[in-house]
Image (cartoon, rainbow, N blue to C red):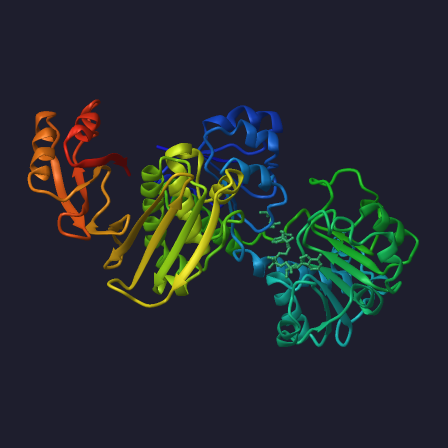
Length: 526
Ligand SMILES: NC(=O)C1=CN([C@@H]2O[C@H](COP(=O)(O)OP(=O)(O)OC[C@H]3O[C@@H](n4cnc5c(N)ncnc54)[C@H](O)[C@@H]3O)[C@@H](O)[C@H]2O)C=CC1
Ligand SMILES: O=C(O)C(=O)COP(=O)(O)O
């Protein structure tokens, strides 16, 4: 059974799902050194924001296939290092959207009405009202930085509260912003016109300290800022200084440059700050959503299936993925076959998508074909994550052609591998929903299902040759499961494809090539 390490608190429902296919070990609060020490034994790692998956952890993870982030942000994972090692990183892009948006809105209203401090005051025995006089959000301007999933839900609810929304998101179309009832503006306009500012963008090298002293200086002295995205997008020292100097109205922070937050000048401020310990995703609903979403993906990857929300391989909608999965299996099998026929020295791979395949997103098909092509050389080191990178590093050029005409099959795929000396090609299609068929080899028409062990010959089409091969295999005690011959011309060249039950014994291939009329023979293991 594969082993999954769960190193942050994850809802039981996700652990139960994983336990059906894997041994699940929950070990939270591991130190970085402890994680490096135990990771070599694991096939999968499931985390939240509490675990830092550094390059060092990834270097030690010699068995790891997948890192599952039960949440959105993967800034605690060294994704480039995982990609280089062929480890798929998945997250749950939507499971906690509502939770994070509602926490943001709660923070905004709490800031406006001083609810946390009023609560503490009352419970300590006082009945004070004047110090807790607040402001209304109605008719105020809310600046949303990052109008993605969380930002747009915040904007929608805030509009219902009667707020005007200014938004800054350089990757968003004006139409989408308009649909959401937001005015897209430049960052400086957002800084200077907003009464509240809320952050909903990822932390990247570009967004690090986006809110620094200079940005804070452009804001209204009454402006209140909310960060439920990531620590480090705000320069905390600059923020604390601005608040202390009365140059800013307030701040509500759920995330911090270093978590857990220990010593910080932010803790010494009064009414104007509200701090929560990274609670944005902490609702019962969100935790169940993300645990199930990520556990399902870990299970699928451990079973050899693609993941639906991988951050380091092309993402696909679940309905598209369902349709493409059999074609990806076909592409991988054909890639493997053509790679073995070409003998490894492939300089370019042409991927011809025909029929319904030509109208689909081709990237997963190309990646699956490259994975298959490289697998004879790289074995399990190559996967959907690193196949593109590995092919590029080997100088394999990929050419894609499309032909939407349907021929004998609804969709078919041809791979043409060019090497320095020769060009080999294979074609395949699906029979029904998911049965794979090899429909031609080097343009010789055949129709065979791929099997684990195959023997291929190129020979002259002449009487007796098939019988000779049959008896030769018999004399080596090799059982033939099926056999087919494809030819273009009577008595011209032909290919013979044999499915055999066991690996070919040593020496048999040499004997086969000695048979008169045989030009070439190949053992193919799929
Ligand atoms: N506090 C918490 O517990 C939680 C925090 N988060 C964090 O919230 C943030 C947003 O999450 P989602 O809305 O799900 O992500 P998303 O990917 O749907 O949206 C992010 C948006 O930010 C925009 N963006 C990227 N770079 C930008 C830049 N330089 N300036 C302005 N906009 C930029 C993107 O175009 C995108 O529209 C992430 O950082 C995520 O990690 C998410 C869930 C819970
Ligand atoms: O999903 C995210 O990006 C979050 O920040 C949630 O973090 P958590 O899983 O609660 O540690």
